[in-house]
Amino acid sequence: MRRLSILGSTGSIGKQTLEVVRKAPDDFTVESLTCGGDIDTLYGQILEFRPKVCSMADEQKAKELSERLRGSDTGTEVLAGKEGNIACATLDSCDTVVGAIVGFAGLEPVYHAVLAGKDIALANKETLVAGGDVIMPLIREKGVMMLPIDSEHSAIWQCLKGEDRADLDRILITASGGPFRGRSREELGNVTVEDALHHPTWNMGGKITIDSATMMNKGLEIIEAHHLYGIECDRIDVVVHPQSVIHSMIRLKDGSVLAQMGKPSMILPIEVALYYPQRGPSIVTEFDPFDAAMSSLTFEPCDTDVFRLVGLAYEAGRKGGLIPTVMNAANESAVRAYLAGKIGFLGIEETVFETVSKMEPSVSSCELTIGSICQTDRDARIYAEEIIDGKIR
Image 1: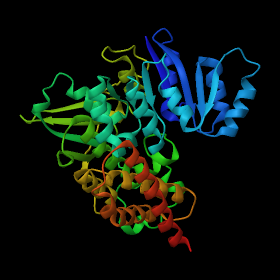
Image 2: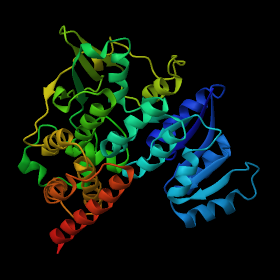
Image 3: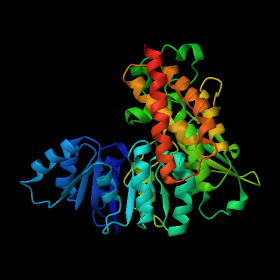
Image 4: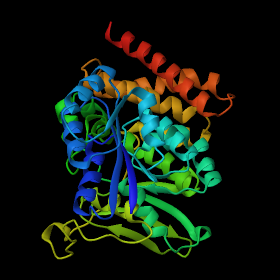
């Protein structure tokens, strides 16, 4: 039985993780839950799963939640803020932490969870983009497991099972292409937030959906794969596959290509991670190769002339150090500004490029520690906000 702490339980991945638990209550217990500010959803989850501890990012809402729970018999302790997230991630009674907090905020709880000897089921790309050079050596030092939940990295992980890593030639990360596949640069200049949030395949939160629209999500996945599988970024390709049936592929040195296939669903990669090294029960609709929707699978190259953030991610991944941290922080700030209507769609890209260009000289020689990563993240956000403010004056 796995004893879970679910960081980000009210988001898409967190909810689907709890769906896996709901389907197999004898296989899992929920020890702790965390969320940002969705008090109603978290309250319902606490009543159903009865965790020992929970945490909310907003202290006032944490107080409100405590009051709402006062009449219940759950016995759940309510914490708040970053310290609360870390306490939930390092709880003695849990053995596996599901890292599903969106963005850089997920890094520190995962870092402390690894220090505490917890296995990590990771959905949060930014943890390894910004902190992979610290997190992955620590994973090896502590002898814990990193279990990828991201559908692409779960697919790669499954394809690599039983293979000699020395035989790996290339990783082929698939991409739906997002809502703007086939658009020109000129057309991207006029897209609305509503257009960008209309993903053709997946139902995700705002930040992740916008990253899919800019294709930055694939840039983040390239750097994440580099850390997870110890392969150079230049041996990782992005393959646009609009049907989203093949979740990623690997090519071996003899030319063989292995692919993991299935209907678009995050339930399966979550289940693969949580039941590892066994396989769990079938709780998703089974893949039918004779379904009409599966009759035609197509592949295209990623147009990095249109979606330039992918190229920037390759460059940041090659340079390493704190450059990916700067890129990620600028992207998070720019996406937030775009969703708030402060900048246009191409303004996301412009903000990220300018922030990286201006900050690279100052961070290139810095020592890489969890402290320097967090400080660089703060500095890059300040710089990106200054750029954004200049665009809207």
